[in-house]
Image: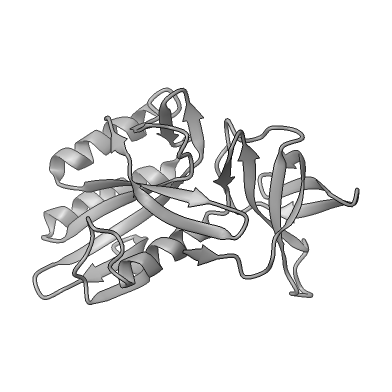
Length: 231
């Protein structure tokens, strides 16, 4: 379980603009601007009037007082703060709480490899592994999809995960599925065809895929198992 560092406040989503800014009407009627950490389009998430959670910051140097954490869609909270799954998955791996990825005595965040800095490095007596985490908020029908916008950075990460495999490492991409209302994960080929093609090629090379379901609440987030996937 990851718990928000400060008790969230509730409001209603008004608009997102300039990628990193979000206007929210708090429950007391005050209009505030919150920081949005997510660089994607947030397709299927930007619903005017939907309930949102913001966490306050006491940092006097911040330009925005709040961080946008999640938005309520139907009966679920969808996490939009991309730092949350990274922290949650890092802690879960250290505690051996993800059955598919256990037995590592070393788990390090933000480790450099070639021209990239991967989210995780894992090691035990037998193997060394790099892993990259991608936050998935986009849903169409039964499918949780990534990416929600073209991502050259994502392509670069896939290519370097392939390079890691070719050099004898294990390599994985962990899709943090913030949409438990979907049933299947898949690459969004209609959004970024090259990414979908490269993901399949990466898997064929030996890169592992773990679509990890994340359940969000008003307190934080928790790991809730794996989702099946189609390429």
